[in-house]
Image (cartoon, rainbow over all chains, first blue to last red; front, side, top):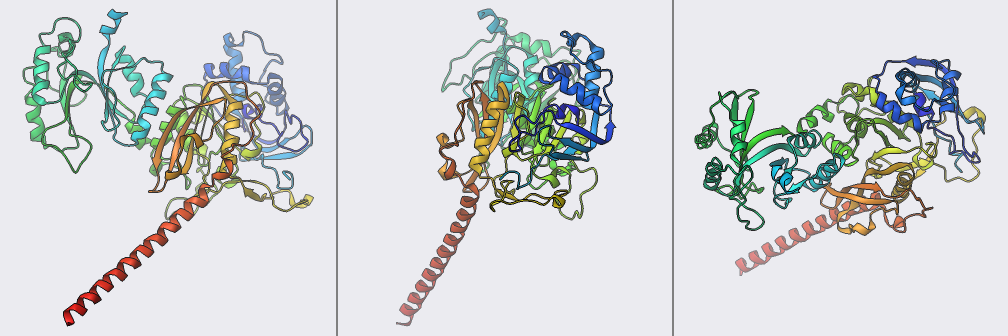
Length: 125
Length: 494
């Protein structure tokens, strides 16, 4: 699971959970692979992100990569920053671990890089 | 403005004669995506595998050809006629047309076969320094190489002074003859003949490159490569888009979307499918190999950089954060025939799971009716699509029951494409393309037609009744035959 995906996922499917965001990451295996850098894409994605969530998530798994805590207004002109964002969003991947719902504590396993967000039949009743 | 129009060149767009119902939808999606103005010289007709159009520049032609999978090639038109004699006559006269623009002939039945192109068009392409060749293509009739050469020799009056080169020449001239589309009724003479300069090929080759036969990871319902590319085109997928397939399966649609530059997400309720651990689909294969995965497929086609993630998730209770907007949603939901329509649930009341059963628990599933799937899908698209962007999805139905007004609908989504692919005599599926037209999403109740649509039941009972009917009909025929035979033998005896 890449951090771009983490930034978009919630656990609001759970009964009684209001926002279910952000999910806490508990990673037991992290992989970093090289991905082609596309500055246009990163520039387009940044406004769709919850920046604080990205910053916190990256740091919580030890891959802050020098990302600033707050986003500068003219980020599109700062290629160095775009490269850092690229790395954090697309190159760092949680292979094994858990996502935890901030409200209910329900855990969702990540195995072989794929998060399993399925509930049990008891939870959807 | 008038001056500018004169500068537009005429092009013959030659299509593959398959998936005809998709031709219009694919092409219109592409020209609107690329924002290219197209003027029809002749009204397009589904029964003819070509369009004759005017386009502002050759660059536009190349752009269109770089996307369309139904387009075979594009020819800069120099002459078009109903007969060979007329075609040559036009070309000869064109060599003296120094007006700098097309001299238009009279139209009959919306077609003019006496238009003369400006001589510069021909002369600029046939300079002595440029190597060239002439291709002859005939539609619905076969000719030997010798016959084709004879056809080429008839063009000897053209000032073709450059050296002939059959491989990668500077200029490829194209002569096309159209003998209709009915192979059982091929006329002596062609209906239409065309001559011009080849400009670009469409994306037919991509069908082979993306063929499921050579794909690492496929499932039982993987989408055919050509249809997947058509879907990506109709979704107007472009470089840097974010695309979602919420019923991703083996990811065929993501392969097509990523080919056109999209970054892709997929989700599916089927854990084993996303982990590449379902039973192998290919005949004779015992177990799935390690690299069989959606990501592996994208690696195979060199688009792994645009793979975002796949998530095991139940679409009826999806996990995407509110406010997220996708550039396109392309999907082929399960119809309940080859893939079950399921969501997490249980019929029992007050069901609980004990703590120690939780790890590795496989949740039970209940029926997720097709009508619910589509109403969830349209509601999702209305909320999660960027304005002006598209949802492209398949919709199965019984052919004789088809009514356009019963297709899934939503006030925020406008149906802009609706093409039929026939599955059997009785069943078909339609490729529906919706464009998001407003952000003002109302709270939608379930579609009123919802209860009616149970494709699975209809699909199977439909087959059964015809099987029974066939049997009864056959029994009736045998009985009639025997009765006739007995009557005959009785008359013989008397």
